[in-house]
Amino acid sequence: MGIGPSTKETSLHHFRDPLVELLGEDTDIDFQGVVLVGTPQDNVDKYLVGTRAAQWIEGMRADGVILSADGWGNSHVDFANTWEELGKRGIPTVGVTFQGTQAAFVVKNKYMDTLVDINKSEAGIETEVVGENNVDELDAKKAIAFLKLKIRKMKSQK
Image 1 (cartoon, rainbow, N blue to C red):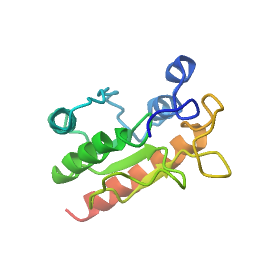
Image 2 (cartoon, rainbow, N blue to C red):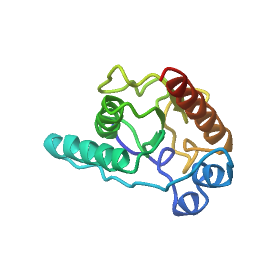
Image 3 (tube, rainbow, N blue to C red):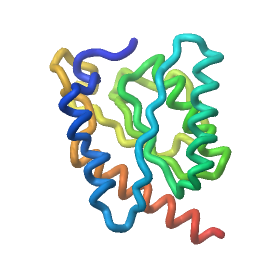
Image 4 (tube, rainbow, N blue to C red):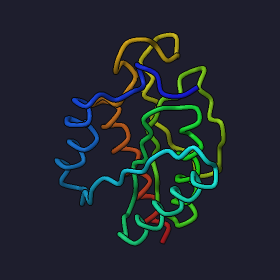
């Protein structure tokens, strides 16, 4: 398992990322930026990068996070850990990644409750079409709507 052609975001996609574009345009959101975190090979380092990313975001006093992973399988270990670290800090998080029908999460935790699956293939699998299974505008709109709802719910409980 890992990153294949259909789940790999191209350079052009990064320059025109729908999540970044829509978050930047949304007047209800104070878009603070993008945190890029690598996917280390060693499990100790996987947990370290997730913890550090969550500490950084906590320090930014973010109201919420859209956590995105470019890839699946082993990359989801980092994804799940970062999501858990954000959850422990009470930061509402919406996940955006490829799951499909054959890419069940390698690890899960109780904070992983809101996911936008970017699978586009009818069979629910990773394909050989470059860029077929990555975030599009509809995925971004869903993620933003889910995040707004989670933030609103958290604020109403305070």
